Structure formats: C-alpha cells, structure tokens
Length: 139
Image (cartoon, rainbow, N blue to C red; front, side, top):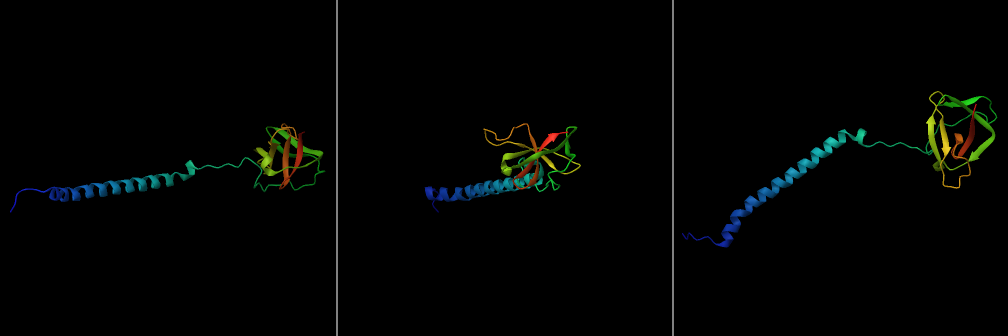
C-alpha cells in the first residue's frame, strides 16, 4: 500500500464532515423558524390590532325621523339632538368616529375631509345610512 495521500483523498475525507455541518445548520435554522412561528402565532391577538376610525362599515344607523325632538345620543355628559334641515351627504371615508354612545349604540362623527372643509370641524354628526348623516347640536 502506498502511504502517500493525494489531494483527492483528503478532499473526500472532509466532504462528509462539511455536509454534516451544513445539514445541522439547515436543521437548526428550520427549527428556529418553526419555534418563532409557533411563539408569534400564540401572540397574534396582541400583535395585530386594527381599529376602524372612519364611518366605513358602520351599520349602526339613526333610524328615527329627522324631525324627531329630544336627544339622540350623549357624549362627555352632553346630550346631542338633531339640527333642523341638518341632513348632509358625505363619503363615509371623510367621517371620523369621535365616540360611541353605549346606551344607543350610535357613533358620533366629525368631518375630517381635505381642506377647505365644507362643514365646520367642530360639528358632530350621526350616521343615517351609507353616505348620509344628520348634523347634531348640544342640548
């Protein structure tokens, strides 16, 4: 037997060790990804929170007559009633929810469109239908 080692023999000797190291590194990486996915899946409720601030999708409508007297909803200790001739048509994306009345389930909205504002930003509205709002005033 010849005791000399050729470069090809030494390369064959190190290949299985390198392949094992690469395989272990790949398995460790996949295990890390799996563990990270499992942990983050358990926290999905805390990580992903979405709140709709516009009137889009709100299905709590004011169903009474626009001529109705008395308070419609209450916010911050102030009762709000309808303004006569206060019906306005505005895109739902232009209205921002200010608050929700727990007693009636209605939302209080403010106009938040682009300037110049056709309606004062201090006025409040209640939704009557998609794109239709009634102006409110403090009572």
